[in-house]
Length: 260
Ligand code: ADP
Image (tube, rainbow, N blue to C red):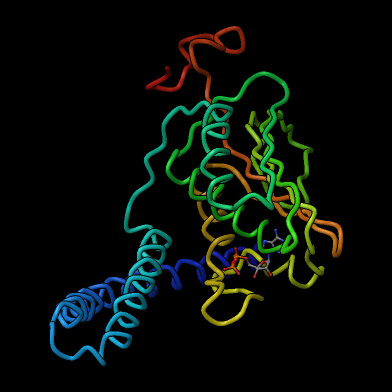
């Protein structure tokens, strides 16, 4: 529709703008960071230590942010490959568990037996990290983070939460929490770049929009189900791949290149 097109153009423009700014800003940051580190090493000015280390830390954080902006504006192209999402999720659960701390219990599961997807594994990992951080922020007193992979076949009439998606086979990664949830107003805007309800210096508002962009570019979709006071589930639909170990599903000549 026209509205979708306008939205896509807006995203594209924002992406290009942020990419350009992030690139220039990154160069300036390197100068700030380098000089701050030199200053920190100087034996004199002991009084200046707290200030110089504040500069060093702030510029490190800023450098991380510009990296995310660069990734967002897709200066780096996607590298899709056949991934075993069940294995990826199980490997990531350890990383997430360590990152989120012991108040959050990470639990993983899978259903329906076919989990090969065609997508950029680095981006899937980044998506899971972002969703894990959002879940932790939504459960300040702790709770359970559930990650599940399943596969679904969507036909022409399938409608996932009003979102457009091509009929076909998908692997769905669902990430659920029992946290504060979102109001309908927040849910509707959550995929917008720079939309955040977290305070200044806390949220970038890029996590979910990056996931959305990644899902679209991978030929999939992302959806949010949320209820205030109950919790949130974000679903990432990725196109199914047919690896040799699943050859019963599709003939080999239809297999995606670079299977296991
Ligand atoms: P950020 O986390 O930096 O704010 P995101 O794009 O990841 O950026 O999220 C946008 C907004 O969506 C958040 O500020 C928050 O209001 C809401 N949100 C995202 N994930 C959750 C969640 N699991 N539970 C409740 N609200 C969420």
